[in-house]
Length: 67
Length: 161
Image (cartoon, rainbow over all chains, first blue to last red; front, top):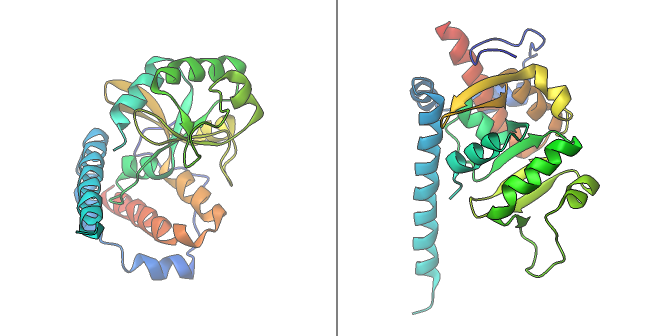
């Protein structure tokens, strides 16, 4: 078992052209921001995001209800 | 909302042997994507299955998406006769996986895990490289964006080293 930053030496990835195409659209600023957080902070952020998504869904359902 | 903190804490304190995989593992490694459930690979020994049953029982696990009233019993026999279970619990959606495609079960994944200290407990999480490999092996188009982000995380991490 390794530290979280250790590299798995058995895994070297051949670039996959499809994945490389998708990679262009990855927002690396978000990744960099997350990498500055602790793992616990990353989970806390995810839970806040879930809460926000729940609120949006609730609001969406309310809009769809017939008046 | 999934109460990751409580779910992980309850399971680890109950000495359930598990590995965090899937979207939650991606979050641990730095993913910015929203994931709704907690995916865990559990060790399928009799003892561990027994611990899993008793620790989760108070949180009323039930088959996710299934109609109410099915004769689903949260007991050792149920877990032993199945493999992967997508559940609802009072703490949120939970996927209990005996195996994952391209990665195998608990014993096969163990050498590729990292130890996390989160929410005051130590638990195992699938390492980033193996997580990518497993996602690649699954070959599902819906995972392409996920793999791209995970590989970008790996590149960013290596850039900082």
